[in-house]
Length: 221
Image (cartoon, rainbow, N blue to C red; front, side, top):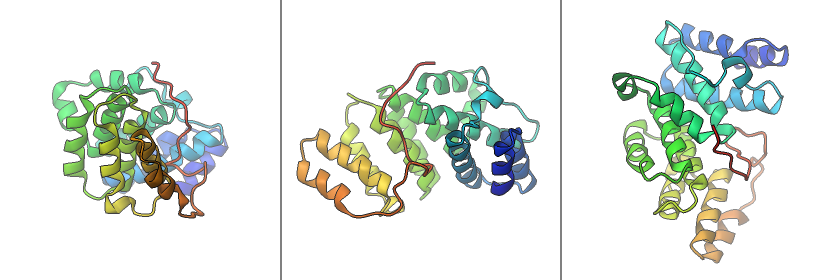
């Protein structure tokens, strides 16, 4: 599945649809969809074959099969997350009927919380807590929330919330989580813990990892 989508991206094919259809064929859970879509969306982006030229940004992609529709949504919103387009994520989700928004899977709601937190909106906190209560130990979901907090400069309680997420067992030893922890400690003026957070050697911190994020913020639609 991953290999087929990667090859399709390299050849200029419609890899988001191919990947979504494959996930539909196996009736993937939201966790499985999030894992695969997050990774492939990043690899395609770094190869210059990102999802947004194929899926657009004007509306959420549609498919008759719920699993396929969910996967396409994961791919599109994740691609927007990698571009820091917080307002566009929020705008797309705001177009959904209230009942549909209430039925969104945890990963999509995590991306919604990311969009709010990334704009320094305290309204992202209740959604974040709801996602944490329901998602269980799912690293990709926690990373999305942590990324939103990291972007949310001036957000009340930001550093405390970041450190709480970093301390979750599911992120134990994760190099990106340590990077976020260091940023939170520095912001609090706690420089020794900040240094300690990034002192541990790691061979897995690499810009091609899907949890990597550039250090600038672009929130325009």
